[in-house]
Image (cartoon, rainbow over all chains, first blue to last red; front, top):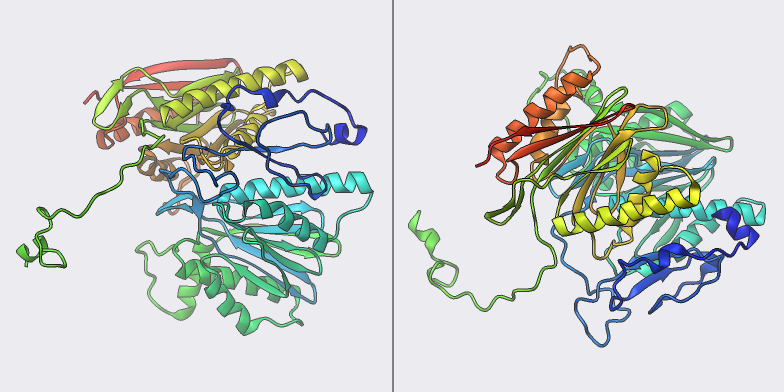
Length: 293
Length: 237
């Protein structure tokens, strides 16, 4: 599809006339080409280079002012996955990104081994928190757009540019249910983007339900002059303490280290072992009544 | 102490006091029950589901399996709201045909999973109330299981249970297939026959404790020879 866009190949978009779009429901298309966003009432012929992401917005409750109203929605009978601890910080040896691996939906652990840190390209890694499906899809869209930019302009988009692009793509969904809070970790920069519209650059970010606990650990020991091993241990400790206290974080810890040469992933580690080691160090009797965070 | 709970805040009795008008809204969703399970092995994948279709206190059908064969190497199990399951499978079948006609090859399991994720997310603001699990063989011939949430978040797993009895089955699978919560056991790889027997046992347990699961069990075993189906009766009460 990228090749088609570049060649301006005009192909009839077959999936637009798909019968499952009922005629009286509004169909919403998000155009991600050149920051051109608009709401469309019906499907007409489009430029071949636009590849829209169609959203089906229900029109069950017909109110006169509801055309662009996002507060109208069907009540969902199931909970979506939320709850996490992710963190990122800069130090002299690059950037460390760490996250837990639990996805919870209501009170159930929907998945104990999710990847919350995904690489976008060789020098950019993004940590996600918020609703699992939203993060997964928006990361995919972001990866696609960055790749298209690279192919069209023969250079990579900067991290600030990527953050701005993501923020602009999320803007039409402000006020809806979409809950996305991503931290873009480049080799020298950390930028936090969220679906409410915030776009912040900083030296240290922690996002999610376990973030207060992670901030506590990080604020105590973080300094610019840490070496690589100390930084990794600190990030791991922060996630471990957060998973211990926060019910919605747990299971394993993922760690990425981004430098000017690219990102490197540390092997996923089960925090159960860390808990036992910690207990032994404190000299307490090991408590085996299932306190695996 | 026990009697005082019958009185509410204002001193009026709770059961006999009219609390005010409540608004009833039309809900476009219904819950039709059912449990789906998928297990991936070294060179096989198993997708199993019960065949009961219920709504509220009634059973609509005892023979409504929730496994749908998509290609020769992929089976989809969907449970939740039956209307959305039917529409979703129709859409997937149509998209599979379109892919086949424009690309001249069958979609692989991984590609179907990615496509299903985008189909589900396109309905982010009016979701399909369906819990999907895809089981099949990947391009290398190894078993693959992809589990989804109703809005399209997905993940490749070794085993997953979805549907009404999923919270009961998933811990049992974690223990027997993932060897979680056991110390000092040898991690024996799962053979096909052992996996099929485990699936049967697990569904018998689910039928004991979950009212929406029962009647019969449909197992689809995907290997490179094709898809074999088995039907096993379960409790009908």
